[in-house]
Length: 172
Length: 269
Figure 1 (cartoon, chains in turn green, purple):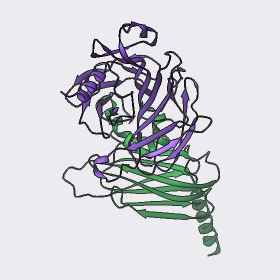
Figure 2 (cartoon, one colour):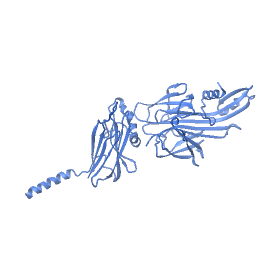
Figure 3 (cartoon, each protein chain N blue to C red):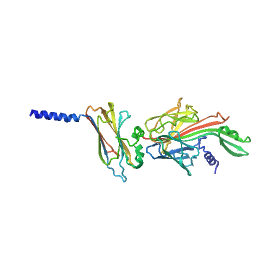
Figure 4 (cartoon, each protein chain N blue to C red):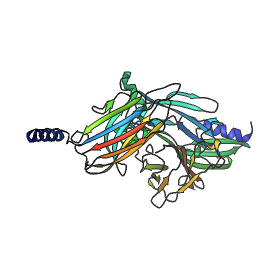
C-alpha cells in the first residue's frame, strides 16, 4: 500500500514537473452580431507596459490571403496597435499574422519560455486586445497582469460591441 | 459681377488664394486620409477657397503651385487633377513608406494701381516691382509669402523632408503631424525666415462647423523659442493658420504679409 502511494506521489510529481512551466493564456470571443453585412473583425493582441508603452505583439488576425496583400489596407483601422507597433512592421509577420477568426471563442497559449515571453522583464503589464470590423466599429480591452507569474492570475472583461468575453489567465 | 467678386477671381487666377489680408475666405486642402497602411495606397485631396471649414461654397483652389514631395524628397506628380465650380481635386499615389508633404508656396509681390484712371493689378517676383509703369497712380504694393501644407503618411512616419528652407513661416514638427491623437500634448515649432518665430499668433479650427453654434477656435501663441503646445480634446480635421505682417525689407514703404496654413488630422486615442 505504501509502495503504491509512493509511486502515485512520484507520478504526480512528474506530471506536476511538466506543467511547472508558467503559462499565459488568452481567450478572445468574437461575438455573433445581427448585422446586414458581416465581416470578421481584424484583431490585434499585444502586451503593453503599465505606462502604455508597447512591449510585445502576440497575435494579429487579418485578411492575409488577399491578392497583392490587399488586406493590409485596413490594418491602420486597428488604430492604437497601428500607432504603437503595426506601422513599423512588414507584412505578413511570421509567428504573428493569422487569418481572421469566425464567431466563437479563440484561445492562445504562450509558455513562459516562448519567444514572445522569454525576455519579458519583470513588472506590471497589460494585455491589450483591439478589434475593428469592416462596416462596423472598433473596440479595445485591456487586462492587467504581473510578470513573472508568482501566483495564478485571472482577469476578464466583457466587450460591448466588437468583442465578446476576453479572458486572461496566468498560471505559475 | 461686382468689384468684390472680381477681386476674388483675380486673386485666384494669380494663384494667390487669400494670403493678403485677414479676409474671411480661407484656402485649404483636405486629404481623404493622413494615416495609411497597405501596398497599393492612394490619397485623394480636395482643395477649395471658402468661408467655413471644410465646406465647398466659394471657389476651387488653383492647383498651379501644388508640389508633392515623397518621403525621400522626390517630386511626385499629382494625378487626376480636376477643377469644379467649388472644389478642385487631385490624387497622389503613395509608393514609398513614410511621410509625403503636399505643399503650395507662393512668394512675391502684388500691386494694385491705377493707369489712366483704370484699376490694374500686377504680381511677380519682388525684384521686378519696377515693371509697374512710372505713370501709375495710387500704387499699393505688398510683399507676400504664403505656405500651405498637408502631410500624409503611409506606414511609419518619417521626417527627412522636414528641412526648413529658411523662407517665410515654416512648421518644424516636434510631434510628427501624422501622429496626432486626442489627450496627448502635441508640440510644434515655427520658424520665420529660418529663425524661431516668437510670439506668433496661431489659430486652430476643428471641422464640422455647420453642426455647432460656436466655432470654438483654439488660439495659441508661440513662445520665445517659436514653440507651442496644445492638447486636443476632440478628434477631427483641424485647420491651422498663422498670419503675420511686417515691414517689407525688399520694397520700400510696403508691407510684407506672411501666412502659414495646414490641415492636420487628429485621431481619437
